Length: 138
Image 1 (tube, one colour):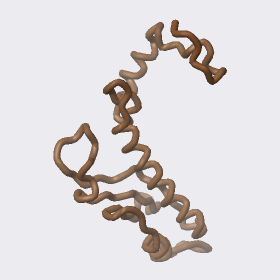
Image 2 (cartoon, one colour):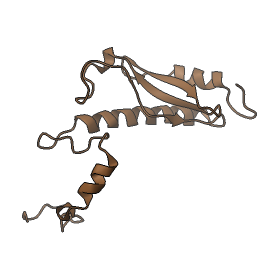
Image 3 (cartoon, helix red, strand yellow):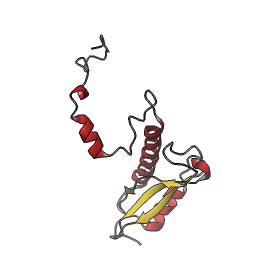
C-alpha cells in the first residue's frame, strides 16, 4: 500500500530487512484492521531455548506491537525497531531477575494482585529513599 507523501509498505519492509540482531530474532511487519502498520519482534523456538522460567518447553514468541506510520522517516523506523528489541529484552530480564528466589519484577504479575499488595502498610518506601543510602534497618 502506498500512502501519499510517505513511505509504502514495501519501503518499510525494505528498511526492516536491513536490520539484524541475535540469531533467531526477526521482525514481523503486520497491519491492524485499519491498515495501520506495526512491527513485532519474533523469536524462534531455537533462539528461545532458555525461554521464560514460567513456561515449560521451547516455544517461539513475539514481542509487543510497535505501531508505525507511513509518514515516518527511515530513522524513525529503525529507532522503532531498536525500541521493540529493547522492550523484548527488558521483558525477558524482568522474567528472569530474582530477588531472594522470587520474580519481583515479573511483567506477568496481575495488576489486581499488585493493587492488593500495594495497600499493605509495610509497602511504604524507605524513609531515606531520596538520599541514596540504606541507613539502619527499621
